[in-house]
Each structure stands twice: as C-alpha cells, then as structure tokens.
Image 1 (tube, one colour):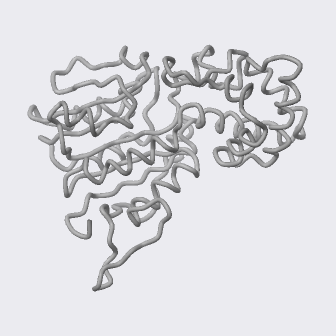
Image 2: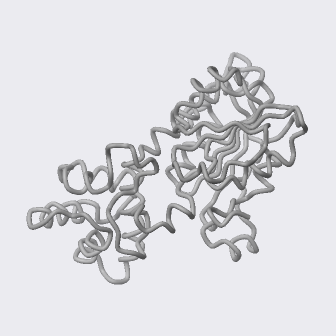
Image 3: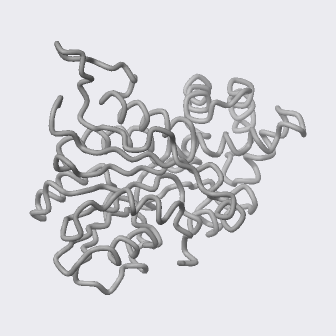
Length: 304
C-alpha cells in the first residue's frame, strides 16, 4: 500500500465497481493510486482506467501502465474531459471522497490540527480561495452559515463572533491561531470535537466539496452506461446523505417519484441495501478509515 494514502475499503469498492474486465472505468479521486492499482489488476489488456486528481502531488503516483490515463483536473469536469478523450460513456465511476492521508500529513497544506501551519486547506494550490481568506474576510453571518452547514458546529455563531473579534486585532493566518479562538468559546471537554468540525467546515467551503459532489452525481446519469456502477466512499454525514438520497431516488432530497405502475423512477439502483463500513481489522490498521461509508449503485436501463 502507498505511504501517500492507504486506500479504504479497497476490495469491497473495486469488487463493486468492475462488471466488465475490458471496460472503461474512472477513478475520480486518484490520490495515492491505491484504488487505481487494484482496478488495473482486475482489468484485462483491453480495459482502460482514467484517473482524475487536482492535487499536483498526485502526479508522483501515476502507474507505468499504458491502460491508465491521467487528468490533472477537479472531477467536476469529468464529463467534459471524458468526452474529449473519447472515453464516454464509461462502465463505472469510483469516488473516494475527502482528504488523503498525504494532505493531512504535509504540514504546510494546513489541513491538520496537530501542527502549526498556514491556514490553507486547498486541495489545488492554484485555487484563489484559501481558509485564511474565509476566516478573515467572510462576514459573521456567512461564517456562521459555513460552520453550521458544513460542520454542524454546535457553537457556530459564538465561534464566528470570536473570529470577527480576533481579526480586528490581527489577521488569523495559522492553524494554531484558529485553535486558540475555538478554545476561547468551547469547554475543554468539547474542544477537540468542535475543532475537528470547524476545520472540516472550512475545508469544505474552500474546496466547494459539497457542490462538486452534487455535480459529479448529476453527471453520473449520463456518464455511466446502463448496467455500469457508481461507487462512492464518504467520510461524513453531509456527503453520505447526498449519496444515499441520490442512489435511492435520483435526487438530493430523497423524494422517490413513481411511474403509473408504482415503480420508482430513478437512474440508479442501489446494490448494497445497507451501507458498507470497514471491518474492525481495517479500522485498527488504518484509524482514518473509521468514519468511511461505502455505497454502490448500478445504472438502470429503465425509469430514467
């Protein structure tokens, strides 16, 4: 396994993805290449795998395999690029959402609470918006909305207010400065949990993660052939709720529409009735896998 990132639910996700060994598949979150390498093992010589990743560090992990094609872009553009590459439609799409271990472990990326670093949190360092802009430039109202919607932070308004007060004194530019602000608002007992959720919320805002996921799921209707698979690993309730609703109903609200005969009209049929989670052994070996949830759905041929 790559030191860059240990792939989560590796066998379960790839088992759910591949239905045709000579098909065309897409790993929209290439990262350390762990899932991609396993997919390539399962494909025959005619199979093709396209990997997407906006993080320039991911290029270091590109496998030396002529069946693999790499696109250094955000997966929100998957449909357009796959069309240009004549790799459209495809037999399956795999998405392992969230932040890679590598991104957490490189201090200057600003994702981790454990080291003092610049408040950055960009998955693509050429993007204009970093976390320091969010905390120093957003209004109290907008900060509160970000913390509530993307982190479900209990003390969202109080933390946003404290951020506003502190930036009147000096700019908030480091992770530890941000942690000090949170400490002023919450109890010692609640601090770690709230801090994790605040950092999650800032990261999601910076990278537009929820909007990008919505775009991917919406594209999947056209992107994947009938009988093809959509495989998504999520790490928090906001992502999982979107994925679950979309796979069950074809929309993000989870409202199921039925045809004249009472059949549910949806572009995908869920394969696993219950969400799949890592085994106890995997969670012990890779503690970052503990919150992972895997959902798999098959592109339907009817009720589109």
